[in-house]
Image (cartoon, rainbow, N blue to C red; front, side):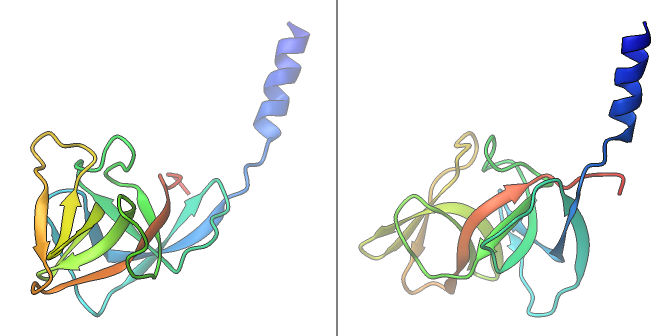
Length: 147
């Protein structure tokens, strides 16, 4: 019994280091039908239980089309790049809507593909469309709550 009490006391004294991350608060990457994108934005600070590296900015993931890997309510970490390779996960703007999707280069544009294909058909982005790749998604995490 004394050992159990000692173990409990030690667990209560453990300190978990948290790492602050600035997140674009009013812009979400749609893992679904699309979110609007604006040039002006606000940020908020959230916390990760792991230090995050190699990204230029962070924003929210909204929707379920990229589950089970990328979850609704997670933060996506994005490195500003152009198109690197087929099948990578990108943050993109298409017709003033933001997305997090797998992209594949095709002759006349790109195929935009969800991980969760149920109810999320592939979409074709023409090279003539209003389209730009914001960056490569290099990480993601669920923020620590109650901080």
